[in-house]
Length: 300
Image (cartoon, rainbow, N blue to C red; front, side, top):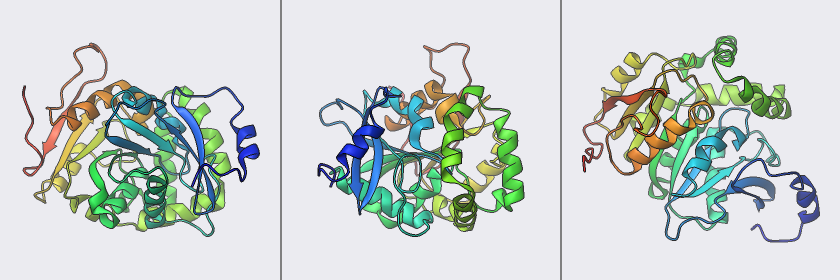
């Protein structure tokens, strides 16, 4: 649990800098590993829990623009999973199921039984595996720019996709993610890439039986085209709602936080995915597929 004194002075030194977020920055210990996380400082009474799950090689820092916008509506948590960001390393190399178990253990530590998970990139396979391992603990899933599988193989191809994406993201994103990539290191990158691309991401996503929102950017080089995604989604009668944000690349949680937060609020309320009337002139967002088993959109 998190409130013991072991390591508290060391963690205090590491958190003495000016906070980089309006969320509270905290530490806990899960299975002997120091885990850094951010949390709504004053979540609304009875608010549903919503945890944001970061991508490959990164910390949760780049997810904060979206998470902060939702913190007044949900009990918001943004951890650095073990082995990533400021959190300590777990013994042994982690794969996607290991990270799903780590997410569940973190929620256990925080006393949260049921949760909505919002992931970006690698965070989406982690969410799909969480749904497979802990189906009774997941209320809803939001899969933003889901990565992994054959479209990102081999490593050379994935590196080219990531390079092209870098030119399409806001320049300020590099200042956020570069320290994370350097900290993660080359050996961890190679191991995690192998685990991620071998994971059956598509099969797990199509097997989901909870309301699921998949969000795509039309400028994302790591994703197949929207038409292919829609074709695949149409092969199963599931709960997946697919929406697109025009002008967005891969790191939507950072680059288009206003549009994404608006979309998530609509999804959580079972409302149609439409543009935010309070943000005229921003990127257009709209549905491209709604599974027949997905809750019907409420028009009221």
